[in-house]
Image 1 (cartoon, helix red, strand yellow):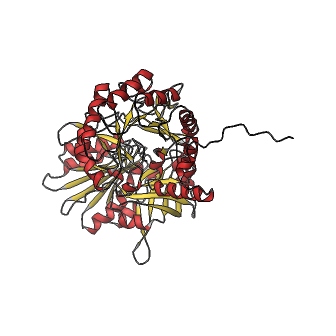
Image 2: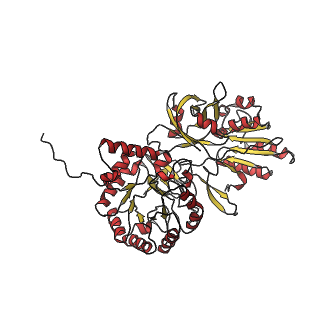
Image 3: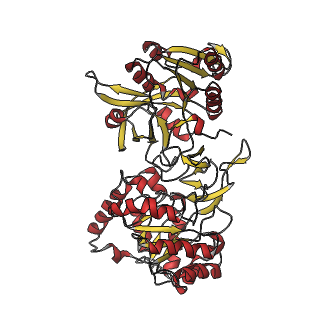
Length: 294
Length: 270
């Protein structure tokens, strides 16, 4: 799947990628109304990663349904909409609009954006908040609900469990890590929002650990992400416990990455004589290997 | 439709201790590129630097029969990516995605084209000058740099009959000062009845000054902007620039899709 915030509304990539070949297009986060987001500069590169604070610029749920969804449907894309809210009522209202629209496969609840003051992460950093958003949206939609979890908590597995208990059909993780970059010459932050979310290969080992922890805490599917840049990274997430994965930052580097990932996974399965990639999920062997006598 | 070429470096010519012209074997992109369009370039396959960088297509290289064989980019060394591009050697590979973005809209004679370039902002004007010459448009290049040694490709433009108006900050060539000063004077001296299209590319302060100057003299102006860009395809929303929308309100517009060439009077420069 193409990760939210890294693939526009999907239509931007229609000339580059066969959208129907993706597991899903996860759209840029949508509030009820349009938002302009933060001023530039919005990103800065870091070692093996990048920091972003876009500020959830977006066209709002209704315009998405009217202007973007028809083309996504025509391209036979599986569409997961990333739903944002500053209040629980807003999450509910946006989810209702999307449930009434034709062509939405699932809702990813964005309770984890680190870059705006209200909403999002204030729910995602509190167990009751997470449960409240999920159960409120649960009441108004039959679509599968997948809260996207923040890694900016002490025990991410407890949030996965809270989401599962509140009726989530899956969880996705991780969103970005809150981080900061300063220009030492000017002593100013390098992005306008001062702080932003760190993504890219630099965060992958932390994300893999968090997926592994969540796999032991919940039964619902886990969609893993965080720094995936090649097929081995996909396999690592799946072996850690992810049922599916999203790719974000790497799509910026290589918009043609998708077929390369699939080819690499296919080669691995053939080499290891594994019939289905699903057979790999959560198969990490963590028991201590017996030490060979010296 | 953009293509991604794992392009071989054909040549790399240092113009100064900071500037270089890198020639890439990307014939498909060269054939499709219109003046003002850009490519997203990444030297090396590693994670540091991670992202591609945007560059205007500087020149389209042609084989002896005139078919596009490659393109060049004009680069100024300011960080790790441009450092790698400065040091690239023939035979190295550079990922090159393009052509991307909206090109310049060429003007028709008898109107004249006045191109305003600051430093590495010269990049989109080589192909624009060729295209304007093919259309029989009289073209002037206002070109400013820090010093005379950083004024490049003057003979290239002279060969296209482009009139040159040069400025340097240290006064070592042309007029001392900023490039917008002679633009302002010459626009003031020009009768309103004779058409001029202003094209500008350079640092944002210079672009704002060029745009204001063109507007002051009621001349249309197209600017090629450069913002920090993540993907070049509209996916990341990094490269936004504030612009006035059709509704009269301010909007953040992605310069990779709506630009890099934008109508100067729509951009909110403050």
